[in-house]
Amino acid sequence: MIYESSAIGEIALSLLKTNQAMRVHSIFNNGFNIVNDKNDLIFIGTNKNGYFPFGITINKYTMHYIKETLQVGDILKTAASSLNHNDFMLSNRNAEVYLYSKVNKSDTDSIKSVVSSYDFCDYNSSDFSRDKLNRILADLENPDVDFPLAYLVGRGQGLTPSGDDIITGILYINCLEPFIAENHLNSLKLYIRESVTTIVSENFISLALEGVFSRRITDIGETPDKETVDALLELGSSSGRDTLYGIYMTLNRR
Image 1: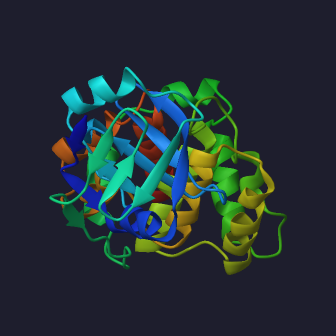
Image 2: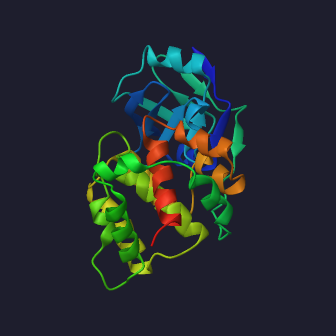
Image 3: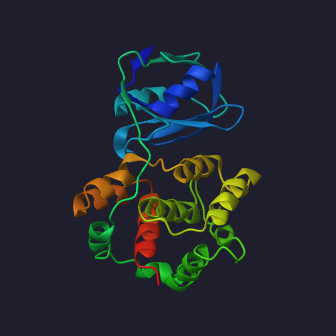
């Protein structure tokens, strides 16, 4: 069976061009992840979770039929124009290529105004209380303290643990309004390579350190209103809310 993708991120396209095969890492309701030998990742799935620079977008019907034959560990032969499985081919010939530019410095007052209307009180009874996050955020500005993000990396459950999603939110605001000491950014880059979190989180954080984020996140900066914030909240079971909490705390840090 031949299926068609509708969109492909430029990072995903680059990975397809430079790899001959990738294996299925994980499968879930709206998509699946494939990785190469270096654990570079491509997400293939519906647009329910938005667009990713390392993503390939398919419709929900294609995802339904692919899942019937797909298993973790399966090998897909890869090329720029297609991915080939024993039971199907996914063609990218007519897919729109999404180009992603790095996030640049910009004013955050309008983002702060929108996200400050959301309630995050429930985090105070978790590992990510306001007091804990405020201490971490304060330490990130101080180059002389120990690496403060070690507490958050990999903390929580799922393909992207809550602590990692919070880090993504922190890094997004840092790209718009830099405040993190350079040595802490360098430490994070090295730390996530030590198998301290999931492969998926490692890829998200690595890209965030380069200023590259999913469309659901960058939409908030481009159009800071309730609609774009609510769209981020729909991401995953808790990933969107955890990311927004990181954004909220960073903008309201003391």
